[in-house]
Image (cartoon, rainbow, N blue to C red; front, top):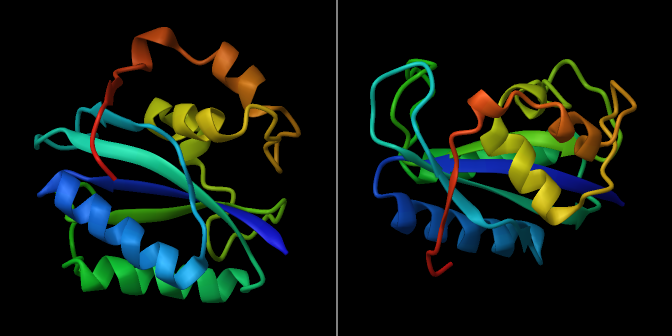
Length: 160
């Protein structure tokens, strides 16, 4: 069994799409552990602010199965495969960690963990002792040196 961490975001009908996506993912993966939801500006384009959070779960599914299922959930919520990389999203789900696996095919661990506060902070909210599989550092130590001018987050209270 492996512990999986997913980054989840939306800036189109944010609450509705996140709530719906989490419901479907709980049906597919079982019990989810959720971070708080954070509001932050869009990255790489001018657009509405995103709501972001991290979900984790334990699974027997392979990394390929998890990856295919999260892409299917995105598609069910209106995501198109040919969208621009930096654009508004109904639902964006990224596979951040799959146990301690390093897998270039699926970009795991996802580089966004080291680049964006809206990914790193919610992961820490779930498990402060997580170790990054490539660097060998705890995410807490990475957060401690994270550039403070790059932390544009505010916690949002939404019913999930």
